Image (tube, rainbow, N blue to C red; front, side, top):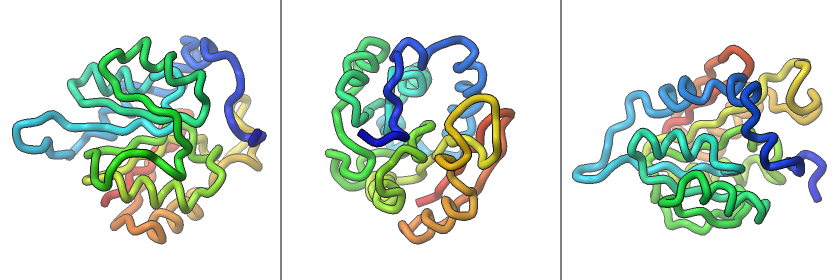
Length: 185
């Protein structure tokens, strides 16, 4: 098993201090800002590395059609419990079982640093995203929480990979504890 992959308690993913650190409402607002809903249907989002469904639940609460994938099979029923109407499947970020341009937004929340092939994960996000991909990550700095610095992604590297994967632009925004990258298709 990949040493970077989350293997802890599912309940730990929903601890109040962790949720506060993730700024879920602000992140969802920023991800959706400026997206245009398709004619006669709601926006759709794919949550890559869905985990226990924290962000999937927040997107669903905004009226989005929600789907998600996670490499860990234990996460699928956990996410389904919080978002019963979601379409959740076991899959890695590098090989997602949905058709091209299936989602308005592809969201990777604190999972990009765990991917086995960062470029392939971004190419999959680009293949699936009609409008935007958003990557929430730990900033490249020492912090008393999150993964060690060696497992974190340097912003310049992420932006270079995004361009290599075919995104038009990759803008970074620093949050209180995290970094959000908005990649335009």
